[in-house]
Amino acid sequence: MRKIIRIALVTGVLLAIWGSAHAQTNAQIEQRLSAHLKAIEKYSMYTGSRDSDALERENKALRQDLLKYAALSSTIKYEFKSIPRKMMYIATSSDGKFRIYSWDTETGGTAHLYESIFQYLGKSGKAHSWSSVKLEGSACEPFYHQVFQTDAPTGRIYLADSTSTCSNSLADERISVFRIEGEKLDPNAKLIKTRSGLHNSVGFGYDFFSVVDHPERPVRLVFYNPSTKSFRFPVVINDKKFPQGRVTSKFITYRFDGTYFVRLG
Image 1 (cartoon, rainbow, N blue to C red):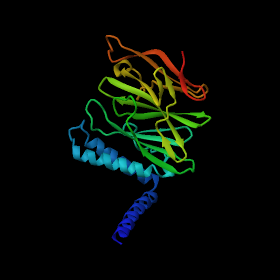
Image 2 (image 1 turned 60 degrees about the vertical axis):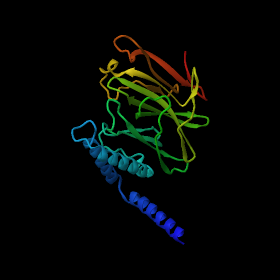
Image 3 (image 1 turned 180 degrees about the vertical axis):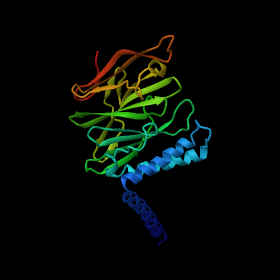
Image 4 (image 1 turned 30 degrees about the vertical axis):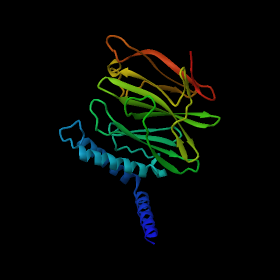
């Protein structure tokens, strides 16, 4: 009997949380997320008012809220205009079915540590949320700032472009493959064929100061061509001035051959 009562209580709490989330408007959700982000900025390890306990608490609360609100279909196309991009990057696919929210936890040093929450629409049209995992081959926790999409015989493929800030000068950028299969998100689709085999991501490290004169932020180094179903990123070489990698004007291109993204040349 006690077990049944406990189950009923837990179920009641979950339904109350779910109902509370649905009762809020997108504007109210935006205000709540913005409040967390402002608190994270206030207690940041990069400021004089740093407070590690408060910072951990706010990051946890933001993570929980995003997982909850990203499960609402009304939020996936909401623009969140009042949240500055420097506080949270929101990258959305052109079909509006896949979105990534990334924010700096402000807990790092010269290496910035980001967290990301993924939002997607399943086959049924229902919204789902999913928390990120560490990227294959990435040295730091990244933020996502571009999402491309490619149609394949097996379904739509999403290419997420992310950047990691590993130090004041060292950065890492990766293109990662995601697929929606039914109501599940597949973050490990190995559809990129490199010289070392099949992978779910490909990327490059570089010295940020070799591209510091680029006006846009984040610096745009990955480009996608929908007509040829190909993406490209720059060749990076090591030299005396930029030992961590100088970004050149030459490019490496991967094109979709109907099954895999294959390197050209």
